[in-house]
Image (cartoon, rainbow, N blue to C red):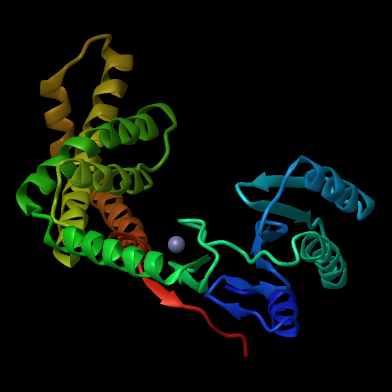
Length: 308
Ligand SMILES: [Zn+2]
């Protein structure tokens, strides 16, 4: 997302945009602007930078009261911290003009280089997954080809639902421990351990190379639902065993099974199961979107677009 401040400045400077960055050429520099967590970031890529240039730029930065910056391979990254109010755009514009002014004066006849091969001719801007960059035509074509191949590889990866399912189950077993701790030691509903089954299940599914697809998401959820049921019953039984132990001073499975037969106890287990399923279903709805998005995450390369 491009927030209004950066959008406005980008438009003013005739920059273009990806979903999250404004980028463009200013004098003989390539400039990027984007928002972060309580920060705005300005990256300036310059034709050349040596130790003298760095010293001059440190002075410019410090005279503008900015404390956070880092050197890039061929440029500088400045971080504007925002505590409560957004950082004033006009200050960003001022420092941007000072720095690009300095470099265009000093390296008047040098153009900005391709960020991959260093060539100066015919560079153009584009974005890979919303990260904007500047390359020559040859590099653009090469990157485009590599991305196509990478995406093909992801698509053709052979995954297996069954192995994925086994992985999801195995990895979510520690979730049962969490359920037992909830029940026995904290005396709380174990329903929230459902979330643990799903998170662990997702990891297990990936580790066991489950096929990455909509079906895969369904397998992870299926394994999660199974574990919710099994985990709730096991945790509840462990709780009874524990209470019996406190009463009788021994672990008595026979008494545990006897108690599990009592209608009130069964009712309580059913209530717990129901709650666990309600919570896990809510979580699934919430989770499935990000799961699919994460899994489908193919690289996309495209030209920047106009800031409207
Ligand atoms: Zn290049």
